[in-house]
Each structure stands twice: as C-alpha cells, then as structure tokens.
Image (cartoon, rainbow, N blue to C red; front, side, top):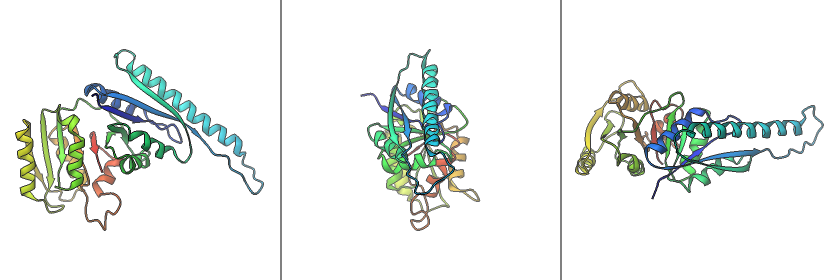
Amino acid sequence: MKPQFHLPLSTYPDPSSFTIVDNAIDLARQNDADLVASIPQVRIPQVHQPFPTFIDVDTWRGQAEGYSRDSGNSLREHVTDAISETGFEVRIHGFEVREPFVYERFSEIARCHDLSIVEASELSRQLSETLLFGSGRPLVLFPATSVCSRVDTIAVAWDGSATAARALSCARIFIERATKVQVISITDDKEIDEANRALLIASLKHSGFDVEDVSIQAGGETATAAIQSAARERKADLLVAGGFGHSRLREFILGGVTRELLVKADLPVLLAH
C-alpha cells in the first residue's frame, strides 16, 4: 500500500509558495508515495450592511475571489512544470469553500491521508495548528527558504512522553528507509527517564539501526534552538518531535518547542500531537 501524502495549498489571503510544492514533490518521490495537492477556490460570503458606506463590498468580494482563483491557477501551473520531466504524478484536488472555513476543510481532507506537508512560517501558522490538532495526522514542516535533500539520517527529540512516542510511530515511513537515527534529549530542560531512554535506544538498535545517543544541555538557548542545532550539527535530514514542552500551566495549548517549530524550522520536521 503506497503512502498517501497531502499538500494543502493556500490561495487566499496569502498563497502558498512554490518552494513548499517543490519540497513536497521531492519528499513524495523519495518515499514512493502518492501526492495529492488540495487547492481551494475561496468564496467570500455576502455582507449585508445595515448602514450606507463608501466601500463597494461586491467589488471587494469579486477581487478577493479572483485573487484566490488566480493564485490557484499559478500553483497548478507550477505543479505541472515541476513534474513535467520526472514521470511523477500529482493529483490535484480542487474544491470550493467559504471563508472562514478554509483551514477546517483542509483538516477534514488531511484525515484521509497519512500526513500533510506545510511550510514553517508565520503565514502558515494558523493552518499548521488547525491541521495538527484537527486532522489526527502528523505534519511535515519544511523551512520556508530552501529545497531540502534526501532523508537518510533522522533525529528524534525524545523526552519519554506519549506525544513523543506517537511522533516516532508516525515517522515510521521515513525511519524504515533511514540509515541512521539520533536520539536527542535535553537534560537541563525537564527530567528525563534515563532507563526509558536507554530502552528506546536498545529497541532501535535491535531493529538494525545505527543509533547515536545525543544528550545535550540547552544552556541559554530555547529548547527548540538547542534541539535543531544538535540535529543540524550531526547532519540530520529530518527531525521528529512530539509534545516536547514545559509545564502544562505554561504551555496549555502548545508546547514551547511545538509553537516555535510551526513558524521557524531550520530543517524538515515531522510533528505529531
């Protein structure tokens, strides 16, 4: 059974970049996965104004919907150009959706696929949060400014939590193709169960992986920066992370690491809730 990857592409108010399209195509090709690109035609509901105004609402609605249509056409053309000489096929799922329900519709579509691929940026943050908490599927976040390489070495941010374990399970499609796994834990951020950590490393080694044990201290860095720095220094191609956060009171909705990764990823990140 081929993996099914989902690429949600925004068309309004800010269109997705061509870079995320290129990264998604490369990731799907490397992992022998099908790729479905969801491209919405956003419809703006009519606004009934109780008082006279100088704003031509109907004209504004038409311009907004036209912008969504034009952005969608540009993204379709880029997908076609990107795969024209590769023999790879990307299915386009076009649909109409009313504002403000675009992200919720993306989340519903994501539930039918193994993972969604999103750009890590402030513009995509709301989409990423909706997918992470609403789809029940993992995200793969790509840096906003670079096309990334093949996934051979995988870094796992491990704190022994259930969400970290879920993220590791969701990353299986990539781990099975990897040549090396790094288990990264920050020892001065929160208490780490060393026996549990040793058991994970032994399990991975028993599965035949070359495993690197990486225990670090964050020092003055944020946990996110420390984890990403450790992964980059060791040439990791993908970081796998779950709820690697602080106390529930401080990080009620999003863990600190999770929140920061959604807007700033220095390397590809698989994130699961």
